[in-house]
Length: 180
Image 1: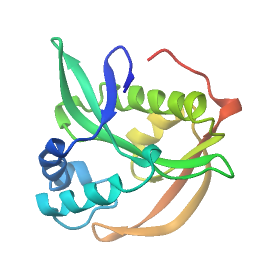
Image 2: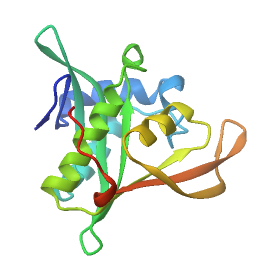
Image 3: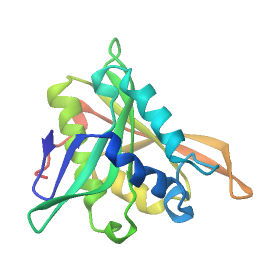
C-alpha cells in the first residue's frame, strides 16, 4: 500500500469492479479514455482476472480518499507493461467519482505512483498518452513533472472526430519528490 496525506493506493479487489463498471459506462468519465463501448460486470471480471495473472508491478491500484477517517474508492491507476531492460513504464490514472474531480487527488495519486516507480522499482522513465483535448490532465501532468515529448497526429477517432494523442514523460533525474 502506498499512502499519502489525503489518499492511498491499494491493490484493486474484486469488490471494486462494480465501481469500475459504473465509471466505464459514464460518458463524462470515459470522455478522455480509450473506451468506446459499454462494459458489464462480467467484462470487468474477465479483465481483472487477466491482469491478476501478470507481474505484481502491473496490477492496478485503487485510489482511495480518506473521508472522515474512512477510506473511500474514488479511482484507479496502474502501470502498463514494465520494460525492465530499459527501466521504463507506461501508466494511466482515472478518477471515476466525478464529485472528486478538480480537487488534486489525481495529482496526489500520480506523485505517489512516481515515488513508487523511481524509489521502489528503480525505474528511469515513466510515460503516458493523453488526448490533446484533455487540458485538465495535461496541466496536472505538467505540474507533476511530465514534459511533452511527442504527438501522434490524428491517432484516435473519438466522438466523431480524430484527435492527436500526446506522449508525455518524466525521467528520474527530472523528477522532484513532492510531499503528497
